[in-house]
Every structure is written in C-alpha cells, then in structure tokens.
Length: 328
Ligand SMILES: [Mn+2]
Image (cartoon, protein in one colour):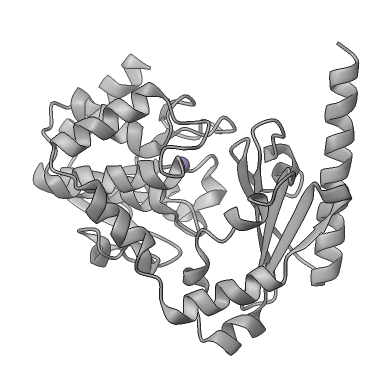
C-alpha cells in the first residue's frame, strides 16, 4: 500500500498530462475525488482534464472546478487517474480513452476492484475514495487548499452517509477533522448538498415514494422512477440522487431497490442493503458491481419483469445466506 502511494506520487511528479475519470452516474465521492485531484494537479502546473460520461449533478456544481468537467474528449494523456471505479467498464465510454493513455492509475476502495491499473491503490478500509486522495496528498507533501479540502469532505459525506454508514472509521473521522482544519465548513458543505432541492426534484421524490412496494415478507422494498414521472414533474434524472436510500429506510426492510428508467428504455438499478445482508453479489450477477451494502447494475426488459427478477434473485441470495449460517 505504502508502495502504491509512493509510486503514484512519483508518477505525478514525472508526468505532465493527465485525465481524471470516475464511474457513470457519479456520486459525491466520484466528483469530490475527481475535483480534488484536478485542483491539486493544476496547482502543480500539470495539464489535467476531468472526463465523464455523465454530466455533474446540480447538487455538486458548487464545487470549484465542476464547470471544467467535460463529457467528450478524443486525445489521451500520459496518465489516466481513475477513481472510485471497481472496473473499467464502470466509467462508460471514457474507458476507451483511458486505455490509450500510457499509464493507468486505479485509486479505489471497492472490495470488488479488478486491479485494472498499471498502479493499483485499492484501500478497501477507506470510507470513500476521497479518503485515499487525502492520504495521497499527504504522501505528496501537498498542503490542501480549502476548495480541495471541501471536495474531499463532500466525498466523505456522500459515501459515509454523513458519517453514519458502517464504512465510517476513526481514520475517516480524523481525515474529516484535518479537512475542517484546512478550511472546510461542514455547515456550508452540508447545506449545499442537502438544502438545495428543487421543487421539481421534491415532486419527483413524491411520485417515487408513492411507487414503493414492499415484498418478500417485508424484507425487500422497490421504488421506481419512470420516464413519465420525469415528464410529469419536470425533474431531470440528475435530481434523483440519494433516492435509493429511501426504500431501505423502512423498518425491517433488508434490501432497498431503486429502478430508474433511462431515456433509451433501459433500467438503472441501485441496490441498498443493511450491513448483515451484502448485496454486491446480486448486482454482479446482472453484470454490475459495488460495495457490500450499496451496489448497482443495468437491466433490460419490462419494468414489472425487472422487479420480479430482482425480487427472486434477492430471495435466493437470502436463502443462500441462511443455509451458509446453518452449515458452519
Ligand atoms: Mn466511493
């Protein structure tokens, strides 16, 4: 691990041009990590571009550098730094560009990481990829600017559910404290993320909440967002960030499922579970991936079929878990 930190610091010192990328459907960890790296590299006089298949959700446009994120680019760089992505296909079309770069750096905290980089810094105990970026900045001897500290703080807030999820460690909280010392206002970051909802976004939430169905003897809750709901509320897909946590918040529900219909008729599925019911295998069985309690995949077909398939797969996973418990 120490070696990987040092190797990345050396590579950054020796190289001039970079692209920074993260997963599709970017969350606060993806965006915060990307923008922190972007700003640090820029300050070091490097040429750096953040490339993303999806644009930045409105929630995060307050972060410095969010306007620099581009959604198309043809020219590769010397070094690609990929953050918070367990596998290269998770970054969408940008993976083609990354493969053309001379060196690929993989910085992540997913257990399921495929080690696709020339240098792999995969720290599964980190609460967020942002936590690793902080440690890397320390290895590089870089003193963080307040905007960089804020980007990393947002990464931590996002992936730890405001320091409540099981991935929150004392190390995570120490990094958070250091970020506050570097100029972050938790109140400012928190209000930017949680108190800026649009009316249309809240109406979309209302429709989505109304769609919740609890099945599997009360252990699974699904929530859907259809294209029609976007049309009726005037909300955009980007405004549905965080909705996936609602179905799981129901008492006794072990797995919450959010199914979002895309423009081209596919479904993006987000799975959220409680600590005692790891869900990444279910996502993987549909070609997706993620963390034990937060994972995702894409599915096709008719919405009712997608839901039925998911419920069945979760039920058989539950059976497996029960029989594993029964036989030591
Ligand atoms: Mn993450």
